[in-house]
Length: 323
Image (tube, rainbow, N blue to C red; front, side, top):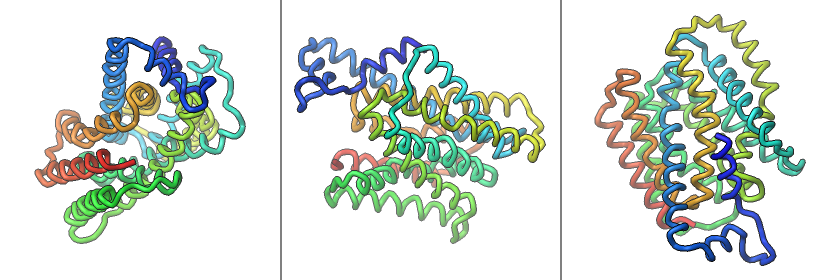
């Protein structure tokens, strides 16, 4: 793992003496083409590994809920991830981030470590992993909208047309599944998209001024006191009855989905860029539908697969015409 982290640090963008060009850009310009090609392959592999880790989140959460309450799953996974992240930061003797970055890190922690895990866990108490995967397929579009508002970038009209089309597909799917109205699970999932979009955007901005993997690592460490307190309270209130699958699901959520997934994902972004990496992210909902079959015994309806494919097409359009 330490070798991967060292590689990620090398991919981080820092400015050199030419204010118009980063050292990363300078290195790429001077490196042989074979080296650049190897870097793209490595970056693609890292991004793909991150997406696979993310796609297992909903099935693993469903496993965790078999023996643990939603608050226990949310808090305990954060404790596990924070302990791993803190250990890595100590091993590498990483200095704490500057004070001006803590507001952004708080947004990342509130969105990716508390808000999104809790809201999706609450949703999965009453809905299937397949259903949640279709709704969560809107996350890249939600992030694009938030990022546009945050940065002031103005995408072309085609971008917004595709974004609205994707949103309408998801809304229609949720209404059809809910018999003409949104279920409580849908409301949790829509709220999860909003907090995750804010966290992704702020984390992306932070990744421009500090090593990208450290964004999630420091956010996890900052959330540790709250996560420990939440775990103790949840264990006392929810009276868990842990099973082998619930423990396996919890461990994966903490170590895999909460820490290793973002770690390799940010490494892929650093190597191949957000646009190319986002194309790989489009496969996440479909991967989740596939995982739900052997892990949960779900049989996603054709409507779910069709909605996921339609959203994928809409997102692909936004990636091609977006800023």
